[in-house]
Image 1 (tube, rainbow, N blue to C red):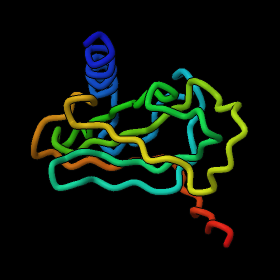
Image 2: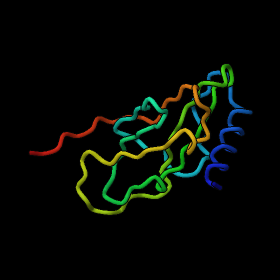
Image 3: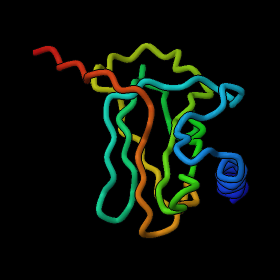
Image 4: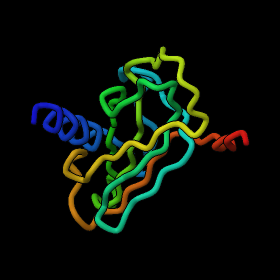
Length: 127
């Protein structure tokens, strides 16, 4: 519950000072901007993100930063910031898929959402 409130509070603070077309969060935020493999939004609004992993990556490894388009108030961007490095040594070339619901991110139903992290192609598994 506290995490949800922090995410929602961050979204409101960013919305208050966001420029009309702002989709770039401040560099002063915690963690590192993560390069991801892929992302998509399911019909129910759940966001699934395929991220790199060495075996120890979980949702708690990231802080999702939610920003709102100040022109529409119904268009949101999400940036994942890695808080904890994955120092494990598993071989997971496709990474792992992590899931956030709209409620997890404090997003209203009906709004559009996109993930703005840079993307790198998913390596093909060796045969």
